Length: 127
Image (cartoon, rainbow, N blue to C red; front, side, top):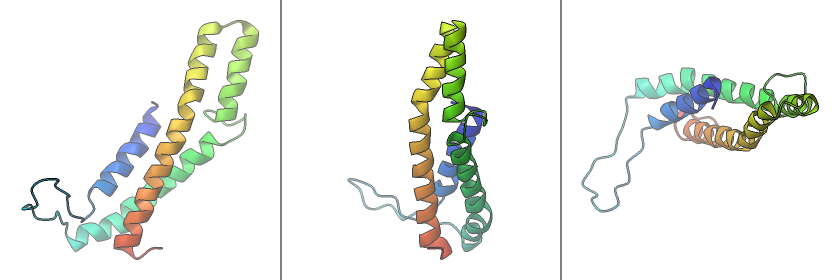
């Protein structure tokens, strides 16, 4: 997984992980819900959530870009074809593995976007 993708997934998970919601305990309900201060919620709403949304949008744009956009699905397909034409089978294999993982990355980005949207709807007054 590329560093930029890891950063987005980690940032999205971390930011959404600090939501002031209760923790569901399967057998023991004696635990109090986890809450955070209104100042922290405000900071998450004003600073973190917009940055995460920007990263998600930027990554989706890159992944769905044309063959001229390095890292896009179309670019990977074009590079794999070039390597295939040149007879470079190891490079073809690596590029095809990256192509297979693209679907997972798009799914993860979609999940992160849904978590951000849910957090904003519940705590930031954004619909």
